Length: 255
Image (tube, rainbow, N blue to C red; front, side):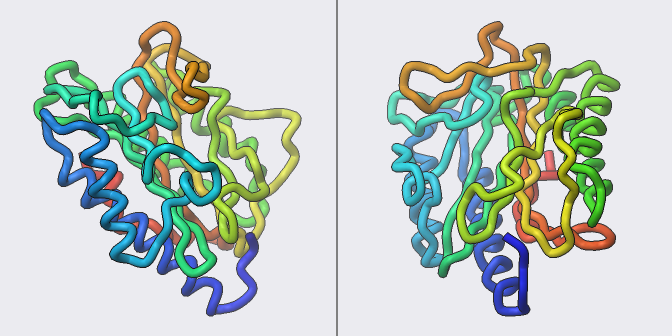
């Protein structure tokens, strides 16, 4: 959406605050030995306390309040009582919600327990690349140029980007135009970022894979070759300078 007045901006800030605080608290809550369903239930409780509604449930009838993806799963991981977190697992939590007609979306990857599998370089790369992307998002900049920056920065660090996952517009719905803010330079995309538009920008950085594949459950997106994938995401408002970060409180830039 494109913000037209101060009331809309305040509504978006409230939604961004709800999902950001929920994500941060879910990350702090997550421990070795927990099931992903236990973590998701906690996230659902937090959203309810804000008066917010899970966007995946509201818009898509997803079987969980949030998406919790482990190791080789890039996104849309279904919370499960059977999936128990182990020492060193790479965990991604993606929280999106609707509050009073406005949507917020954010996510972050982290290691549970000790980093015994050395996921730190991949996580830091994803965090740094999202920060670089945000530094380049301004009114009039081509969307594909920012995608090219993300891919170039990933390759500089020895990693790849997932090409069939992307960021998106957001506001009155979870997914709005621009429908694809890719992690690579799409030469066919001539769209430009527009002032006061609301977007969810997310990095999908992989150890090796360039694509993920949907599993039989119809949701889970996973690498075929067991590559690990990290994701970090903020909801932003485009300006003539650095964007307004609506989900700044989520702490996704902390390791």
